Amino acid sequence: MAILTLPGLIDPHVHLRDPGATHKEDFYSGTAAALAGGFTCVLDMPNNTPPITDAAALAAKQRAASEKAVCDYGIHFGASADNTEIAASLAPQVTGLKMYLDQTFGPLRLDSLQSLVSHMAQYPRDVPILCHAEGRTIPAAIFVAQLFDRPVHICHVSRQDEIELIRAAKDKGVRVTCEVAPHHLFLTEEDCEKIGAGKCQVRPMLGTRADVAALRANLNVIDCFATDHAPHTLFEKESAQPPGYPGLETALALYLELARENILTLDEVIARCYENPRQIFNVPVQNETWIEVDADAEWIARGANMFTRAQWTPFEGRALRGKVTRVVLRGETVFENGRAFAQPGSGKNIRPF
Image (cartoon, one colour):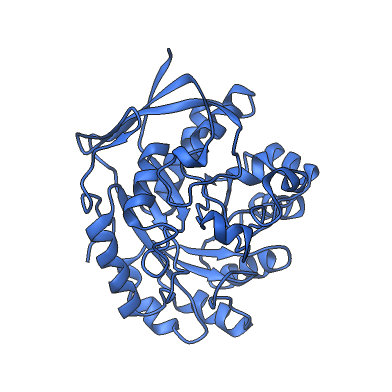
């Protein structure tokens, strides 16, 4: 048995559904899933019901997290067409401003160029701007960010032309960072038949084999790994077919698979799961915090055995290798051998207010 001791991982892109859709997930179940996956800090996206686009919605979410979370967390704020000033004023309380420039499930999509320009111009430069951008909206986001001399982070890159554009921008010295989700590194559109048509829906959609090959060939361009953990119930996925996959509990084993395939070194995996997201999103150091992983443990992904309230996974039945056996957060064992011990509300907001 080979036990790896790693820093507590950071996931900069999760959807914990609380408040507004707690039948899918809440801050307890979602952060317990995070601990089971080796994540001691998660940054939650703003597409709640209602969306996190004003002070009242942000306060409600902060309350929910403070009462339930068992790992540390940050909250991303949502950009809308008419909240430029309020977003800027609340920046000290959040970990980033999320701008939805492409298809999304909910009311947060920004269709106006003026909205993109206004937020890029006025949002404080010491707090990141993240963009859900696909295809042609990626160069738009990068260009406008450059006009206002600020960095920009592109979420869940999934296509060959996208990662090649970001590589070209970085080669020119442009201040752009990006992330990729494990499902875009390990699944293609050909897997939809096995996953199931409704369950396969995700944004961005799964790509081609060429897209996956391009992402893997350009991992040195990718700054972060991010699960885009987006749980829905199995009934919802098979009926209304909302986009999104749960991912917190399968991610690390998949990242370790990249290391076993000699695509990345273990240190490079850690950089994308800890060092780079900590730097990009200004995550404070968690003292006396680490995870222990049995690198040789083999297990089968079964949604029914997971902490996430979704109770399913697009990797259902996949043989995985590498299992989190213990998580220590600020000197306390909060997860060990499949059991979560942390009390609801023990997780800390990394942007206290």
